[in-house]
Image (cartoon, rainbow, N blue to C red; front, side):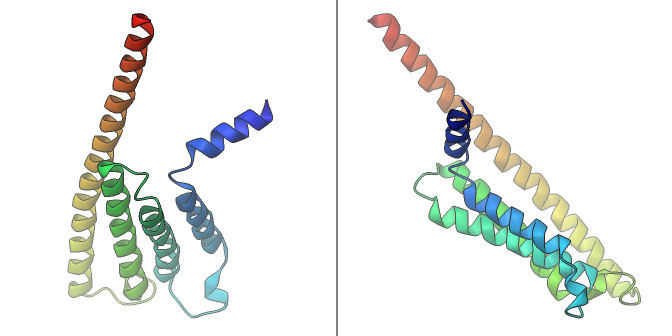
Length: 154
């Protein structure tokens, strides 16, 4: 019983194992107080964790590209670009933390531009993932219908 459940879980995660591994690694980085060892801001710490997650998405996309359909690759790659860009921005802009620097007009304007950009990209990301889910549901329904039809013909 447990063995079959484990086997089923292992098979169902075949397309996202690296993402899960890098997610665990990123969460581990979040729990380690890097600021005790290196002088970085809180947002730079977040940026490191987000970059690790984005790198996991990139690795999964590269290594699983043959197993993934077009929408899955687009979803993974879009997610990778989103998280790598967020992580890179957080890592290279320590002034995002208001306790680290004085808020200037340029910084506030840049924060607004970043927020709007990430909002638009998030909407795009949701649309791509939704399209992938709908395509997989269509394929699963078509496979189920085909199997049922073949069984009825026998």
